[in-house]
Image (cartoon, rainbow, N blue to C red; front, side, top):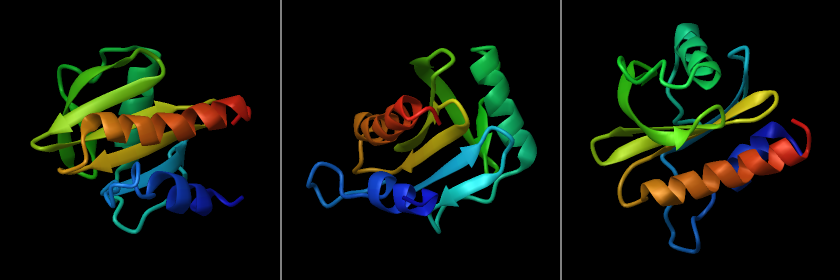
Length: 133
């Protein structure tokens, strides 16, 4: 299966038969290389990915400044240190799951809930971890 298929069929999918889906998503290598992304995923700067990777290595790194992606600032909220970073901005937010080789991103807007975004992103991330990726 191609990386783009994972994004199209597993991240941008209909969530629990609700007809809703994430606003955008991507799978990005630890080095910042884009493996696959939705057309709506923001254009990001390499230093934004560097900051996210640093927060996985040193949880709490982003808390004082916020998480930035594509120039958008998210307030960092509870996650799983070293595994998942979650951010909130207004009625939307972001979930990032770290695997052995990549970061799985999901960005949502209402009516999608934070829990739905977490479920979609972390389910694919856990699958990739199980595959050694």
